[in-house]
Length: 109
Ligand code: HEC
Picture: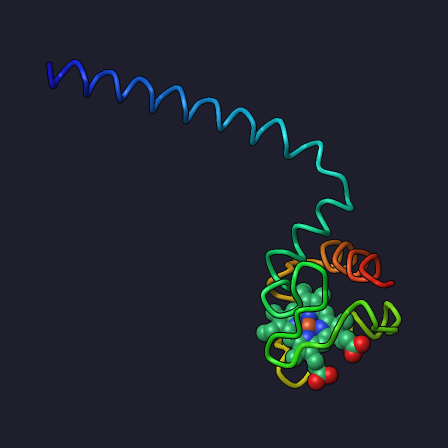
């Protein structure tokens, strides 16, 4: 009886893990550049700036009222500023940095 239950569970688990793999594969290639910028922002920036850019944790600036140019934002991402650490290593490459900058600007009012 116990064995049957265990096998049953194993089978269920197998089904669940297969189906979740499937959705991952379905989602990733269709991610738009905007969505990628938004998820990078959520992963690397939202802890201080908040999902909407207004959180202001550890003294982070409100990104919705920021007026910096792409070049100035790149500079802050590459070098950090005061309590903000450099984020370029975490973002990995220039393409990701550009996607995040586009997302940051889309948060502006
Ligand atoms: C550890 C917290 C933290 C994280 C993570 C963080 N920031 Fe910041 N950010 C700050 C702080 C603090 C400031 C204010 C710096 C200052 O001027 O003193 C700031 C300022 C900024 C500014 C300047 C805004 C302005 O108008 O002056 C931009 C742009 C910015 N962050 C973008 C980002 C992006 C994009 C990410 C993710 C790649 C990120 N930040 C991740 C804390 C953080």
